[in-house]
Amino acid sequence: MLTKQQHYDWGLRALKTILTVGGQQIQSEQKNSSDTFSPDKEAEILIKAIRVNTMSKLTFVDTKKFTGLLKDIFPGIKVEDIIYS
Image (cartoon, rainbow, N blue to C red; front, top):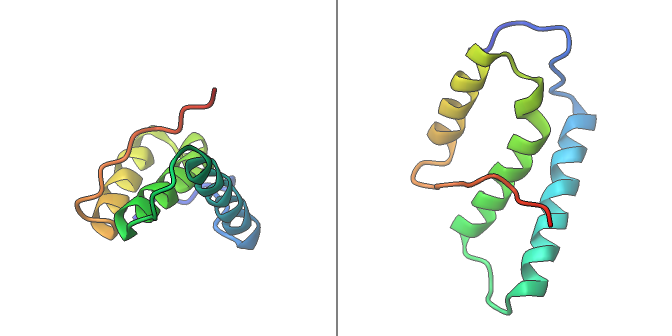
């Protein structure tokens, strides 16, 4: 669905970055709360990690399409941007 851009990277290196950012966010959340994670909370963290790693590389048109894809893959999950202190 996205346009073909040379700088788009969907390989293992990009996946590793997403998993690393997601893991960091989970650790940060666990330090701030003793609650266990629901599947929705895990999905929210994963979406945040995907967005952090991907959105800046997309064209404006592809950003809208990509956001739509994330909503299709993770229906009902509302996500805000990651806020770094």
